[in-house]
Length: 288
Image (tube, rainbow, N blue to C red; front, side, top):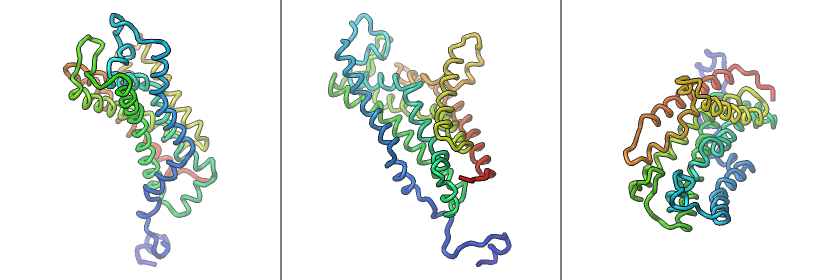
C-alpha cells in the first residue's frame, strides 16, 4: 500500500492499473459479437439490393422526370450511392446510431452485469468513455456501410460514371467521389446529437429500449417540428433542420454554410448531453 493510497483513504490492490481496465479491443469484440450488431449490419448491407430489386420491378423513370436524387439513381454507381444516402438520412441511419449508443450502459444494467463491471474495478468515467468510443465507431461504420455498398451495387448494375445532379448538370466521377465522402462524414457528425441523447438516456435508465426509443422519438419530433414553417427562424435550432445539408457538398460549387451550421449545432448539443451522462453516472447508485 502506497503513502498516496493511505492519504486518499483508498486501498489499491497490488498490480491494479485503472488505465488497463476494459481495453477498447475487448469492448469492441463484445459488441461485434452481439446479435443486434449482426442484424443491423445485415439490414444495411441488404438495403441497396432491396432498392435495386424495387427499381428493376418498377422500372426507372423517364429522363424528363428525373428531378431528384431518387429518380437519378439509375444514372451511375455514384448516383445510386447518393440515393442510398438520401434514403438513409432522417430515419434509416438514425436507428443504428441510437441503437449502438443507447444500448451501451442500459444493456449492462438490464443484464445485472453493470455492478460487476464496476467492481472489476473499472472506473466509471473510463467505462463510459470506452463504451461511447466503441458505440461511435460502430455508428460511423453503419453510416459508411450503406452508401459504400450502394456504390458497389450501383456500379455493378449501372456502371461507373459521372454524378448527375437534379439541377441538370453533372460532376466528374473523380471530383464527385471525395465530395460524396464529405457528405457521408457530415451525416455522421449530424447524427452525433442522436447518439449523445441515446447515450445519456442509457446512463439514466435500465431499459435499453427506453434509451433507444427515446432518442429515435426525439429525432422524429424534431423532424416534425422542422416542417412547421410557422416556427420561422426557430427551426434553425433543430438538428433536423440541417440534416440534408450534405447535398450542398454535391453542388457544382460546394456550399459550406449549411453544413458548418448543422455540424456545430449537432456537436454542441452532443457535448452537453455527453457531459450530463458522465456527471449523472458518476453520482448514480448502481444496484443492477
